[in-house]
Picture 1: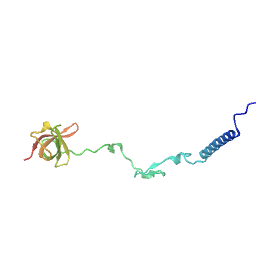
Picture 2: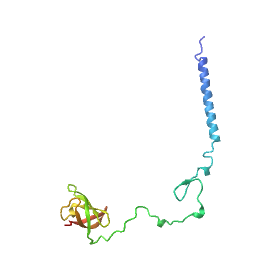
Picture 3: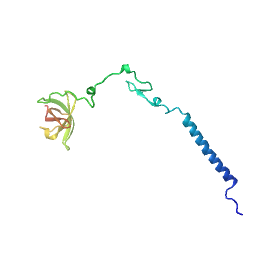
Picture 4: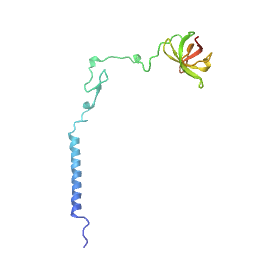
Length: 151
């Protein structure tokens, strides 16, 4: 007669594994039934107060402010433009690249940076030159035209 392939040690180890699995399942079940997190919807709700802080107390309905949708501005507020028509401005060339043919002029009156293209120059300019110019609105912002060096 042949001997069994399972020894006493293998049988004991198998019993330990089964007992360990049962204990783990029992602990998991106990944790899920005794937990208080997530059982109540009111416990999970958070509120944001007028200062942007998160709290668990609801806001006071008497302190509610009504805001009209028309009053909300999305984006950057536009600056009030000076009248660009026939107004000579003065500025300093902050950057100019001869090989690429463009640069920027800082307007002394407003402090704005104005794009200048080489085709709008009446004479060659360099960085730190003081210039007079007129502006026009281009598709990407203000452009300098009729640029002349101040002598």
